[in-house]
Image (cartoon, rainbow, N blue to C red):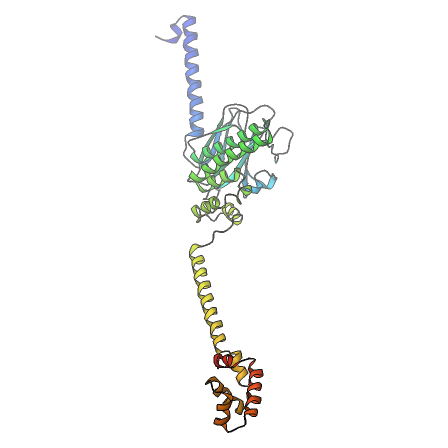
Length: 346
């Protein structure tokens, strides 16, 4: 039956249904057109209050120390946000390795290069991306920093890390100092566990960065040395900066060699000193050299246990002369009796 032959009410209903189908088809086609292609990109739909400019800015964060600094030179791309909230960045010019980026919006009348840190009007969030990334971002309310990621594991972890940090801040806001310290330590430990189990290098380091690791290095040095060992092949500036802040682990093999060398050196030095002592003339030997030829003969007879009379007869000298020589020998050898002469070391 032709539409013109229908009663007015029926024709109206049919026209309305046809129009609705056409509208839905066009809407779905537009949505499909925006999200269907599989090319590398950062895109999504966001809901914004009227206080914000309908424009997104993508900045490259080359170092973790620059996460909360802002300048126009850091912005590498811009995207308009259309009336449906859709935005898109083509990213085929990005490096092939993961880098850290920041997406932000700015208020109407404010500088494009402005970020708000903390609170409900926080106007930025961070992502990890490379030239092959396919990142879809949505927010379910008008809070720009509260976003979700579709089918993007890396940035879902980043989002989880940021949620933990926000929870730390909100919990500590009204807590006592002691409770705040306990809460912070507990959440930072959770962040370190995420870093430890994460299989994406930069995402893992991002979690560690958010745990404020620099105040924990001295107390937990082994953990950070193990972390460096795990990612020893990572040579990005992010990791170079991190590695420079962690004390290097002493090589166990080198330590063993050093200990062995020290022991050998000690033994060698001991042998050398002992040899020198042995070669050095004994004090008593030096004293013997001060004796005259006649005194040495008498010394030998004294060592043999001869009496003055026997020495006198053997050497054909008077007893008084023998006594005089014996007295001189005692003085030169610093002894007081024949017994000491007998025990005297030649």
